Image (tube, rainbow, N blue to C red; front, side):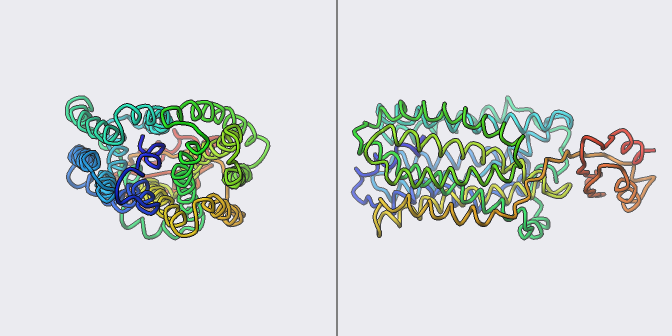
Length: 423
């Protein structure tokens, strides 16, 4: 809710500057990026719910600091404190713990959809709430919402009984070092960093652009609503296009849409219609990339290391938000706001060039089995499973009592694997 309004309302603070504005918008992402993996690992040691509750309290404290701020400096401090409530990994792990193995992919998908849906709701209601209660009101409301979540976590969300295998949901520090340098995963991690850098740049500049065209803040939602609605139609068109082109080719097309839209916004100072058209192109590309990158990370990550791969991915994602706000603020401060979109468009051109070797492979299915380690050794289990048709990768973890398999679901037969490991 803060992103589409902060650029307009922050000018009333005595220490306002473009750089402070960028830090206020992106600062949340820095502490999220730093703490995402450690908080996930901590939840494995002291429990999911204590970490989630602690993160919600930290977010509420940050919201309170920002709500009572009388300067941009305290807004920035509040945003950094909000980001310290980095509980995404712990939440996903808890969701895995309390769901059956067969239903776990659906549960994760529903959480992902809810996160995406909340983003669009926030864009629409943020300007409305800000018009009625001001920036202080938005921060106060987010703090109250965080506090209201705590009883839900304690009394409504079930406590974990059957723990999900750690490699499925949580980062493992020994895996992080290896996966960080994987060429395909590195391309995707840098891509999500740049993607969230671009969306943050957009929300530092676009509210200012709309206000310059005569649209008051409380009316901005009337522009965002048709833009977002049309972008869903564009997303569907791109998904259809993936049946005729490779996913990697469509991803590069989306980057061109982002770059073209940003360059177009540089020149779209005359009409609201032009802003809406370029905004539609941007969100069409953004929607597709936001949905595609996590699926590719999940597909490419080795068996049993998805939690680690997604932890790194999330850290890069939040770091991109921080860099987007900071670099946008620096550019506005020292070379002029009119050049921010041009620089961002140039970054997209370099990004497109760097993804020429992206492997947009089809998603592989993942399976978690619990073999009988009293009858077979870990080495025997791994060797036997590797011979099955469709198996791409096998990771045996005796300490967890599980074996992770990544396989082509069209030819892999789960029953054969279960017979093989349990006799």
